[in-house]
Image 1: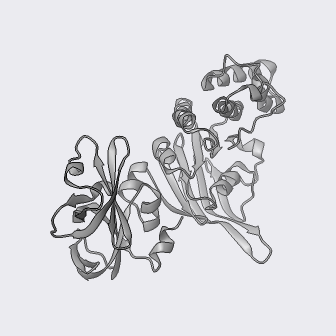
Image 2: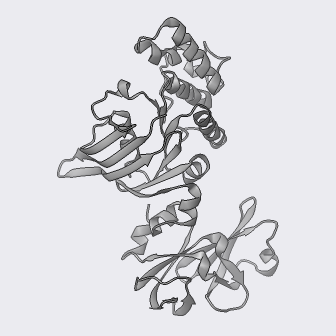
Image 3: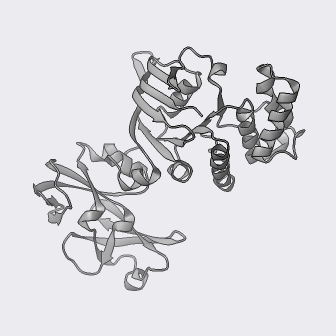
Length: 362
C-alpha cells in the first residue's frame, strides 16, 4: 500500500493578464491505507491537486512521491491510480462487464486475469447480477458504483475520487459514502476523496485536508478539525460556529460589545476573535457574567435537536439544544428577550482578522 508525499507543490495557469495560482506551496503526507477527504469551497484547488497526483496535470513546481519515488516522470498508467469522476464517467456504448474490463484489456492482461478482475470488482460494488446491463439501464447510484469498479479493475492501490457523490440524490449519496469507505478499508486502498460537502467529509474521512485559495489551511481527523480549528475560516467551514470580536484588556479578559468577558487562556493578541459552537451556547432569562442580551428570532426543529436563532445587535447567534433534554420551549416564545452565555473553556481564540466579514465569506 503506497504512501504519498507532496512537497512544495505549486500549479499556475496562464491567464490573459496574469498567472492564476491554483496550488500554492502544498506540503502533505498521505498515509498508506488512509481515507482522506480533500475539503474546501469551490475554486480552492482541490480538483487540480487530485489531477496532479493522478498525472492528468503537471505541477509548475514541487514534487509528488509514491513510496519515496518521484512520480513526476511517470505516465498516468505507470502511477497505477484509479480515478472516479463526478459525472458517471463510464463508456455508454459498453455494457457493465466491458466497462470494467477496459483497463486490464488496455494494459494487456491475459483473458483469465481480466475475467478474475471483472468478476471480483463487480462483486465488490454489488453489480454481479448486472454484467450485461448497459449504463443507461442503471440508476445513478449503480452507474457510480460501476465507475468505482472500473477504477479498481487494474488493482490500483490509490483511489482518487473527484466529488463522486455530488450528482446523486441525498439518500443514495449517503449510502454510497459508507460503501466507498468500506471497500477502501477492506482492500487496503489509499483514498483521496474531493468534496465541498463538510458532512460528507466528516462522516467518511480518517483525515481531512482543508483547503482555501490554493493553500492547505489545516489537516487532521474530523474530531480535531471540529474541536480544535486553527483559524476563523476552519471553524466556519467545519460545522457551524458563532463569532465575536473584542479587545484584550488583561491576560484573561476581553472587552466585547461593551461587556467584560472572561477567557480561559492568555493570548498575545490585542484584538481577539472568539468562536463558540452552537451546542456550547446557553440560554437564560436573566443576566450574569459572560452574558449577552438578544431576542429569540426563531426555533427550528432539526430532528434530534432544536436550533435557536437569537438576534443580538446585527448578529444572528445559533444555539443547539438536544430534543429530549430541551425545556426552553416551555419558557420562551419567538420575540422574547433572552440572555445567552458560554463558558470560557468552551470558546476558540484567534487573532481577529482585519475584515471579519471577508474571512467568513466562502
